Length: 298
Image (cartoon, rainbow, N blue to C red; front, side, top):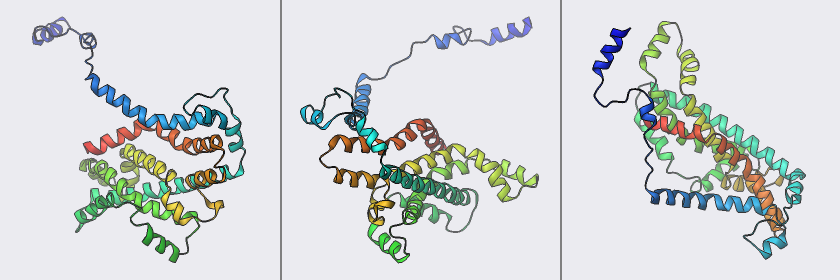
């Protein structure tokens, strides 16, 4: 044991730390203060409107009129309690949940299938197919809303949640494919060959190996799809007519029109409408960053 220690000691360079503690004792280098100032300024610009809406729901209309930027004195919970006791809010909450979950499942399942084919198989027009999905990122929904509405009307899906779900899946696929393809390409060929030797079919390899290994990417696209679907406003605005089918973004508009004079109550309704997506994003923020980092590395 002493001979081994002596040999390692002879290999060490002069002045090298004798243990891991030397690296930990090094002071951390801070970046440019101007960079931190710009970052904090950007964070403040993003968070300030959200805080104003949330805090405004705890105020009365007279407080908002007297001091628009002040804190509630006293804090009033009646606005939030009135919204939470409304059947309209919970109906719109249920519609948003159904649309968001159905759209997310469709985007993840179909996007994973398409990405697997593009990443793991060689066929004609493979590059053209991938380029088509990449071009879909530059094709916003607003541009296609008129022909899309005509198509949905011909299919008889106007004023139905299904008429919102199907287009959201279609427009969510480009982002999903662009993120998942690098994950699936990064899976070594040797794993697939070993699975084939063990008797696993292509579907068996897909479910047993591909899904677990691409988990971070799947979680990332699922979170992005859910948040995008929850906050979608333009498509439900064109497709949904009856208030019974409204999602929360449309419900905020209808509520603010109905209670235009009750600003505090409108702020409370808006806060509760955006709160689920905000919490969802905050909880899974690290997974989104990790998934996108893996996609870039792949």
